[in-house]
Image (cartoon, rainbow, N blue to C red; front, side, top):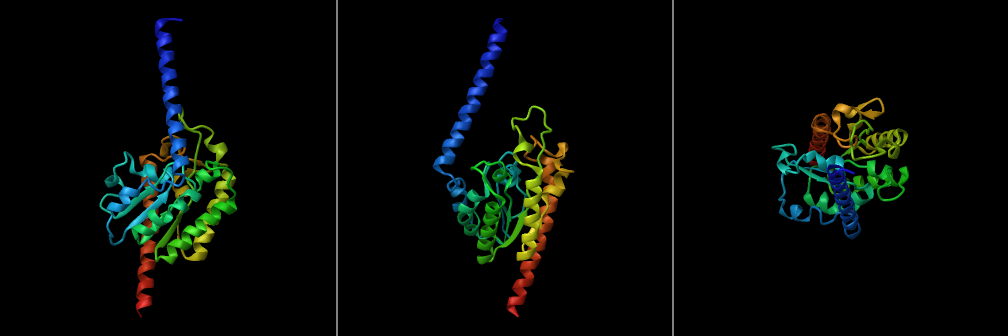
Amino acid sequence: MSSSAAAHGAEDDKARVAKLEEEIDGYIHRLTDWAGLVYYGSDNAELRPEPGRVVFLGDEITERWNGDGDPDAFFPGKPYVNRGIEGQTTGQMLVRFRQDVIGLQPRVVVIQGGLNDLAGNAGPATEHTIAENFMTMTELAKHHGIRVVLASVTPVCDCVEGSARKDIVRLRPAARMFGLNGWLKEYAAKVGAGYVDYFGALAQGRLMKRELTADGLVPNAAGYAAMAAAVERAIAEEATRSGRAARSDGQ
């Protein structure tokens, strides 16, 4: 073996070890703070009440919306707060719902999740369990006078060469995704919540459009732009409903 080949192999080994160490650190963190209760603790403490606030609760699809993590890059100039945590399931989101949503006193909450439930990130999850988590979060929000927008799960694809994410489609079968989206839309209509169709904004057929994703799971800038247009409409509709309800109560 040449010295250059040996050096290249050593670099590959170092990269693999670094990746494994990062994954282990992530597992340790999830075990010590399963629901991510301290993830936004200091940020929440610094927030003051703000009219028209909207909280986006979700997993990596929501968290990565910030791009480089700069909170000012998330819907600039609008009182929108990102409370996504990569890898989370709806059960984890439910546990932190009080501190990351209710405690921030938003006018509207956008709840996005389910992809990691379907992939079994926290163990096997049934559609019934996922639905119960969405229902409980919705009921909690409504009890505290917060309008709700439920978001569809987003499409995925195994279409990005060299992506570090593997078996994206196999872990998230289209039939289960369509079933969950159908239930979310029906439930939203039943309880008077909003619904935003992220899937329709990003998909071609059953899969994510290649030009709208960074790695087959998370949208890229163009994908987030498409999602933003859809969710802004849903938020505006919920804000209008809230205003009508307030006027009706005042009569």
